[in-house]
Image 1 (cartoon, rainbow, N blue to C red):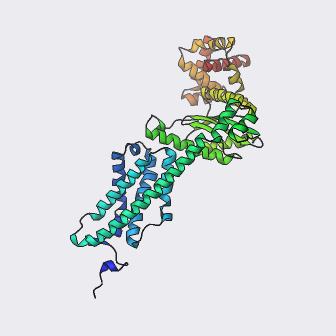
Image 2 (cartoon, helix red, strand yellow):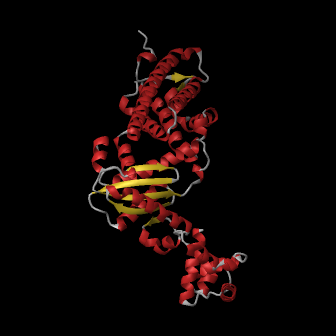
Image 3 (cartoon, helix red, strand yellow):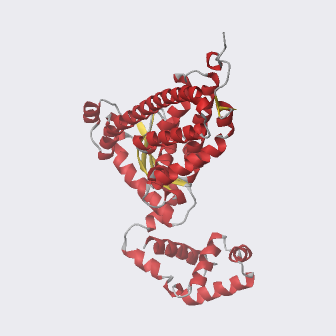
Length: 410
C-alpha cells in the first residue's frame, strides 16, 4: 500500500517543488510592498490616507495577513476567530476615520488575489492536488476575514452614530444654549454635573491636514479621536465635545474644580497625544454659567492668538490688559495711532517690539535681531524722535505697550 503525501498532514504543501508556506513567508516583505502600491493605485481613498498611516497600520496589516495565511498553509488548519483580532482592530480604526467599508473589503480582496497569484506562479500539473487544498484554505480564510472585518467595522460605526445623536450630544447642546436644569434632565435623561471646566481649543494645522481630500479628513479625525481620549480619561466622566480639525469646545464635568496646574497639564498631554500644538482658554462654570463662560474663553483665546503668545492654556487673568484694550472703545483708535509714524519703518517697529520683549536690554535685543547693540540704541533714538515716546520713561512705556495691543486688536 502506497503512502501519498496528501494523506500525511505533516508533509508540507508544495508548488513547483517548493514548500508553499515557507516561500510565501520569505516573500512577504516584497509582496506587501506590491500590494500596498496597488492599493494606492486602484483605491483613491487609500491614496488620500496620510503617509504615516500607509507605512504604518496599512502595510503592517497586509504583511500580518500574508504571514497568517502562510501559517494556515503550514499547519493545514483554518484560522481561528481569536486569531483575527488585529484585523478587527484595524477595521475599527478605519471606521473611526470614516474610510468606507467597501474600500476596506476591496483592499483585502486585492491582497488575497495577489497572494494567490504569487503562490500559483510556476505551478505544474502534478501540483494540482496541493493547489486545490491551498485554494480551499484561501477561500475559507477570506470568508472568515471578511466576516470579522465587517462585524468590527459596523459595530464601531453603530457606537459612533449613537454617540453623535444620543443623549450626550443633546446634553451639550442644551448646556450651550443655557436651558434650565430641570428641562435638560427631562429632555435628555442626563443630569448635568455640578460644574464644568469650559475649554475653547485651537489646533495648529499640520501639513497632513491641509486641503479638503480624504487624507486631510482622516488626519483631522485621528487628531480629534486622540484629544477626546485624553479629555475622557481626565474628567470624572466622559467629556462633552464639539471638535473639528481646527479646534472647538469641550465641557469637562467635575464634582470639584480642578487646580489650574492640572488643567495646564491636560492641555500639554492633549498636544502630545495629537502630535501638534494646542492653544486653549478655560473658565470654570456651573451649568447656568456655561454660555457666558464659552463666550469669554473664546474671546481670551482670540486675544492669545492675536498677540502671538505660545501654545498652552490661558485664562482671563493671563491676558487682562490685552483683553481690556481690545474691547471696542473710542480710545482704541487713538492708542493705535500713537505708533503710526512707524508704519513706514518696519525695522523700527520690529525693534520696538523685540526690545520690549527683552526687557529693554539692548544686548539681548541685538542678539535676537542679529544686529549690534549700538544699532539698537540708534533705532530706539529714532523711535523716540518719530513718536515722541521713550520706552525708558515708565509712563511712555505703558502707552507704548497699550498702543501695540490696540494695533493688534485692530
